[in-house]
Amino acid sequence: MADKDRIAALVREGVALAEAGRGGDAVAVLERALALAPGEAQLHWLCGTAERVAGRPARAIERYRAAL
Image (cartoon, rainbow, N blue to C red; front, side, top):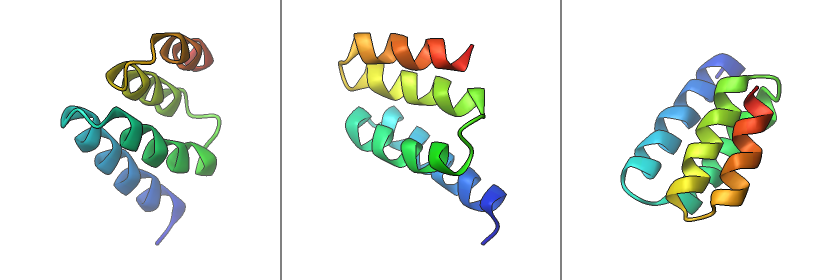
């Protein structure tokens, strides 16, 4: 699977986990996508959202800042 396809699959999985209230699991999955594309601001933003869902607002802010 090409990196682009792998990243897309990981993003879908991470977003689904966050939407299900499983923020910690979502962060773990989204970090795998971020490892493949560390310069992608959207991935940092999604990690921030997952951190917020996980109840970690300080880490969420750090992730959001990394997206800027």
